[in-house]
Length: 127
Image (cartoon, rainbow, N blue to C red; front, side, top):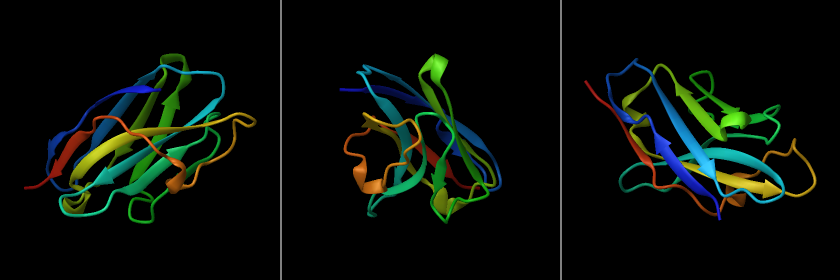
């Protein structure tokens, strides 16, 4: 069972930037893809971005393409979400998640493949 330590959330004005970090531990054998999800009050959780184990493949929700960038530092077991040009509708609790594959480092999970998440970090975009 992976453990996550998420950080970097906070209050930012529209147009501002934040970088979220997720330090993971508890790996077993396999290739771990990571993702970021978010959930706003009264809304369903949605996938935001994901990255393959190798870091060579990424996927983004249409609403954040061109503004958010997911990356990872495997030496630090950490995944990042750089969020630029933030909008009020980006306000949500952001969660780190992972999916392990046994046979490839290049696979991107579907949003529904993720089944567990960290504690989350609050991002509030407001003037």
